[in-house]
Image (cartoon, rainbow, N blue to C red; front, side, top):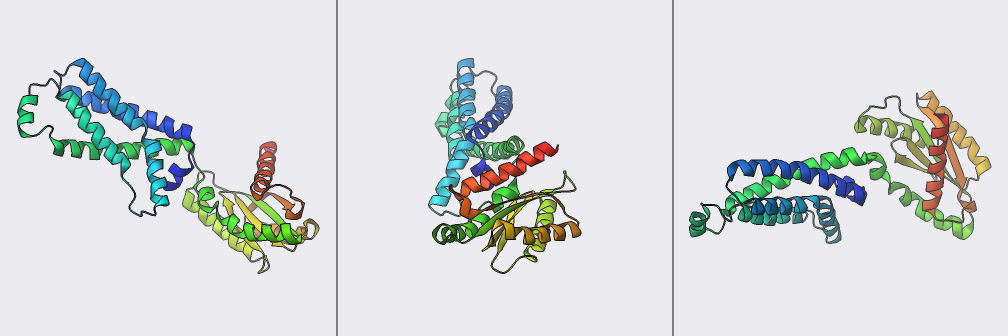
Length: 283
């Protein structure tokens, strides 16, 4: 869930928060109407609006929790959202009971039944987080494999990039697009498929070369001290090994890093754009 919340667009966080807030606030509003039918409409509407607004912010609050936890290296996290829900439910209940006949009796014992508020806020916070992540997952449809492995290539590319820029040593970066035979496969099945293909590619490379997983249908290789012409030999060997192993290779794109005048990020974007363009044209 950390990967999902940290890599989702702000618009998706807001939309998922709106859907979650609308569904949960409507449910709570109907429930409290049955429990407190005599509450003045002004107080009831104010309470619902307040709870609605605090719930809409769930995506941004959870992302802020994650940022603080990473910045200060807190393994247990910071429950800001649950604190917000407690405060929201505290004032929500206060407004509902503002002109209730039972308010006088409650005020003699405690300003508000804090235990009930605490339990309600805890349950509401837990259920809204579940609903929020379910909605966000369907809105974002993230490539978890790509998000998990996105930093791996930089561990290999950064030191190589410095060597290429400084000494002009040849190095070919290649992306290999595979076709998964089962489009509806689970993430675990896709991951096993990719890891198996990645091991097969590794067996075709030299010890100095690097390879890994880029996304749910893409592998990468870094062929050190190899220009584009010479790279045809190992790449052809890799393609033949993958096909012999039962994998479908849709396309291989490559680039000599010596010819690049931009950043490594733009190089990857260019190559991935070529793969996507080829996939669209083939359909």
